[in-house]
Each structure stands twice: as C-alpha cells, then as structure tokens.
Length: 286
Image (cartoon, rainbow, N blue to C red; front, side, top):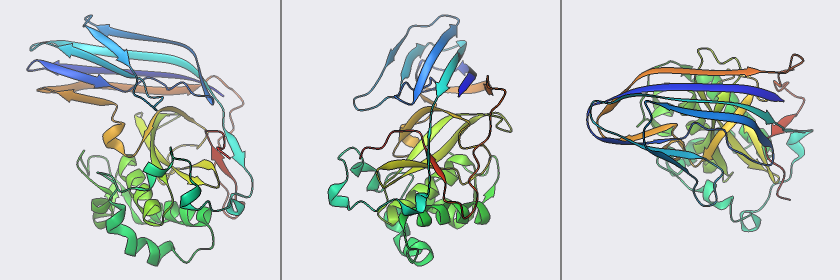
C-alpha cells in the first residue's frame, strides 16, 4: 500500500532552544520509503541521527532567540502488513521464552503505570481464555468507556489518570491500553504515525501487543483503518516517541499534517467482531 505523507510545523522561539523532531517515516522490513524531502526555513543548523536498537529517525536543530522557523517533511511510503487469521488461537509465550527485545515492554513506564492497574485489569479481563481475547476486550472497553475529547489532557497525563477521568485523546487511549496489557503480563508498546483520513488531520497514536510471536495492532479510538497508517516510531510510551521535544522557551504556531493514499482500490481493514482477524506490521519473531 502506497501513501503520501506531509507535515509542516512552525515555531516562534523566545530564547535559545534545541529541538528534537521525530516526524520522519521509519524504514523497516515492512515499510519502504520511496522518496522523501526535508526543508527547514530559514535554514538552521541540524543533523539527523538514530538511536541504538531503534528504527526511529530524529532531527536535532538549534534556533536562536527571536527566530521564526518552519520544518516541512514529505514522503511517499510503501507499507506492508500481515493479516493474522484466527488470532484468538495465537499461543501464549511464557515470559521466560520471550525475545530479549520484547521483555522491556512488560515493565511499567512513566505514562503506563501497569503496576497500579493490575487489580483492575485482572478483575475486568483476567478471566478471558486467551491473550488476544484479553487485548481485544481491553481495546473495546476503552472505546466504550472513555470519551475522546481534544484538549482534555496534556503531556503529563498518564494511563492511571485516563482510567479515573475517562477522557482523553489518542495517546491517552493508547497509554491505557498498554498499561492494562502489561498489567496482565502481555508485552505492549506505543505506536505513532501518520493516519489516512484522520479527522481532524493530526499525528495518530495506537498500540501493539505482543501475542504469539507477533506484534498485533490495536486502535481503541476506532478513528482510522488499521491498515491506513505510516509508522514514525514505537516506544514504551509517548515520552520516548514525541514528534517534537524542545529545550528552551518556544511555542508551536502552526501545524499541518496530511496522509493520503495513492491506491484507488484501498480497502480499509476494520476487524469484524467474532471473526478473529488481526494485523501485524512486523514479521513474526518465531
């Protein structure tokens, strides 16, 4: 599936500041960048870098006090995904047999305090017969019990806060899903990317749960088709995958995010209740 993505962010800088952007599509075995461009106006000193054991691509730049600048990124990206038939039959993998790269996604994190939600998770979902059924029930519970309200939360809102307040945006829905999965000893991670036909247009956050050797995709907001995303990054939570971090006094004055498909025959993947189909954006490790 081929997508065209675009992001444009403008900032006014009130003191010397350093920015770290994470807006570029990641390059993986399931996602190929056909072409891309990056423009910073006016031209500022910047460099691109990656972190060890990560496919995220970062941009670091420095802007002096009084600067107004715009960073623009656009790309054509081809994505692939696997449809998992009868996902409810995926086997449970004992923690002692998990790949070492998966183990960190079992632990509580800043925004996903799974240790605080364990009693609730076991009571609500622990009786279900398999891991896929548990995660699907978690995603459905969040959708039916949490109101999607723009501006209701901020960067400090955690999964515990969302469970109590029952409102939030996509990152809050994702954090709650991740925390509840980890509370049931199911590895889960945060996913951020560009989303097809997102209304209003914005970056989008979902989550993946590790079930039977697959990173299985879930979106408790139900705002986009599960096969209509271009990955930017995955991480333990939003603290490690923010599209923009800045160190200094600055404000974002403009944002324009777009994601369109070049495939006229695009068929949205929307799970059918009881059918047991799921998708994964990464090949199985087993």
